[in-house]
Length: 139
Ligand SMILES: [Zn+2]
Image 1 (tube, rainbow, N blue to C red):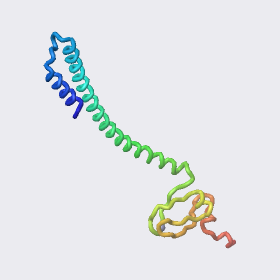
Image 2 (cartoon, rainbow, N blue to C red; image 1 turned 45 degrees about the vertical axis):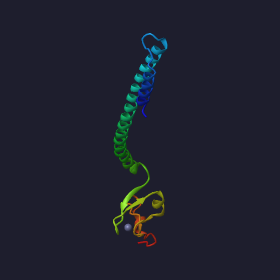
Image 3 (cartoon, protein in one colour; image 1 turned 90 degrees about the horizontal axis):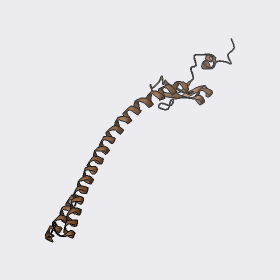
């Protein structure tokens, strides 16, 4: 039973008592109380309906926000690729993305996690001699 239904039931009970709501003080009191209960029941049910609608709107907003976060945080991660000391290269053998981090740079080689092939780091800046690993071969 909803609150409205309970109040309607109560109203029916009161009417069954055949109370004199005009001359009897008690009858008048009960009649006024039931009127107030009817208003309260309608108010509460309106509030419940509003709360449900708000909940649905919040769900929609939350989904939209998740979409926005996805875009914003993806951009941030792209920026961090350059700020942090790691980057991605493409495996020449299988085309998978290989993560090159500090550790790989220090070792001077990186292993493809997909096909397992190891590569010497091809640093094109001021460490080119490491790439060829022919330091022992003095010309
Ligand atoms: Zn590979």
